[in-house]
Length: 125
Image 1 (cartoon, rainbow, N blue to C red):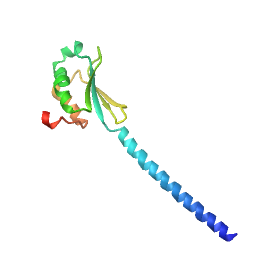
Image 2: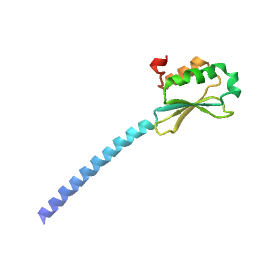
Image 3: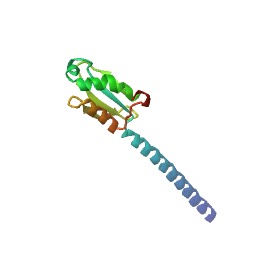
Image 4: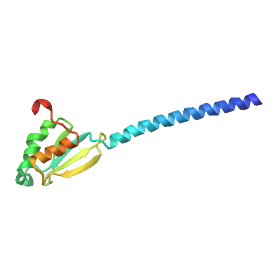
């Protein structure tokens, strides 16, 4: 009977160690996912392509001249009647932040995008 009890204790300890290891692995995987949830993977500028944008020459130049230089993870989305906004997204496409661009200069628009970790392609600078 003593052999059986010690075998069960060893089995339970092994099971406990296995479960603890598995849970720590899941925890590490989830913490990596959680970090990705709060980092910027892409950016999108949403705006009309005329209307109010015609009254904002700096923002219009930023959108049509500068924005294409940032590569494929930064895009322009035409939304009729929309005021210009920078939308920052995580790797899953979830919106993390939204910034109005209407009161910014062209330089400030570029600085905002760069401050969020986006860089222009070297060959087009």
